[in-house]
Amino acid sequence: MKLKDIHGNGTERAFTYLRKVVGIEFDDMQKEICFIKGANKVRNLIVHNGCMLPEQKSKELDNFVGRNENLEIKDEICLVIHDAFISQLVTMLINFFEKLGEKIEIIPCQVNT
Image (cartoon, rainbow, N blue to C red; front, side):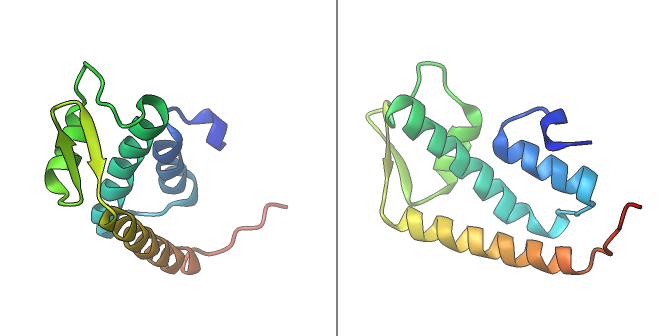
């Protein structure tokens, strides 16, 4: 199985690849993964809508914003991102990659001959 064979968006495809092909279990990383997926929704909103909420609501985005004190919806149409969100994102990414690094270190190397 190759990454191109896996469906979904970039982050979802990457997580699926790491789980199915590399054999990484993410059970103890759910907090970081949920945050990364939510941040990806925010990223998509910025890139594709200029922070303006689409007419058709996204339950996942609404839930992520509702749980995050550094994000807010203004006038029901615009996502406001406070400066502290960036620090929060960086911290979550560091935590994720530190945990991922630990998991990768314990995976035995397989050489195809």
